[in-house]
Length: 332
Image (cartoon, rainbow, N blue to C red; front, side, top):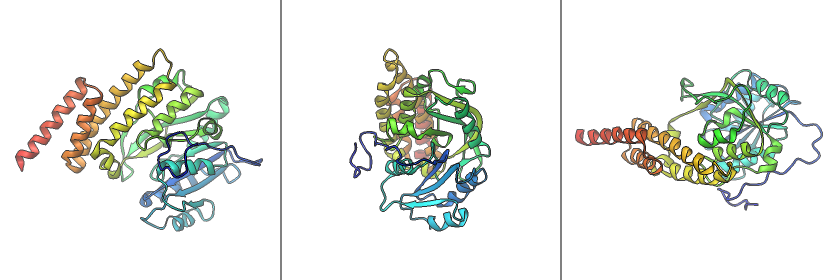
């Protein structure tokens, strides 16, 4: 078991089974927050509008020492006692905060619901129906789309190649491409108890987890778009993107989850995963450029993409990026 002092554990931290928990809710909606104060009210109201009551749904905010507002007061104001609040004794980082969320979860099904995202009406009912129809599954998810800082839809997710229900060989699909955002997925607590928590990296840690789950349990999905993942400037202009750390960590993630893939296909799937990630990072270079006009950030994404995979899409994207940077220098 990893030392509790490690902000980034190097092995999956253990999730202990609950003791003496005879009367448990079905859902634990656990909301990890850190400096996303402006979005928390909308987040919590989206839960409360489909609240199933305390006997069936635990709702708790787990605050990693936010400094941008009084989160506890806001939770009390919005929840009026319905939502519990827990504050870390000190800032522990995202992975340890997720671990705390899951260990504090009392329900059979855990929704790790980041404080800047949104659930739409019907999400929990749809997830409950999936678990009722397919009790053998270890996780279930719905469709989602991306929203911006103003909660405006900006693009759809990549569609899952499967009808509603349990997905055949989902480990292969999810191994090739990161198809999920955490907001869309609800995991059995017992799944985390068996497999452990997030570890190793702070960019792409969720992808590793979803591949790990898919390798060990059936996974079900509904194509209904019932969640919204928020993209905002702190996503796009982060230190990760300017340093290229996100690319290095994705390579680590892919190399880690190769062990979960069917042995005969593992290398081929990992190669496709790197190609898909490279094309994503090549597109990200342009997004970073248009948000911050950072040459360092744009080049980190462009050159990192080419280090992962050289193909028509990455080459064309890189060429366009280099031209944009060259034009900007000439204007100066």
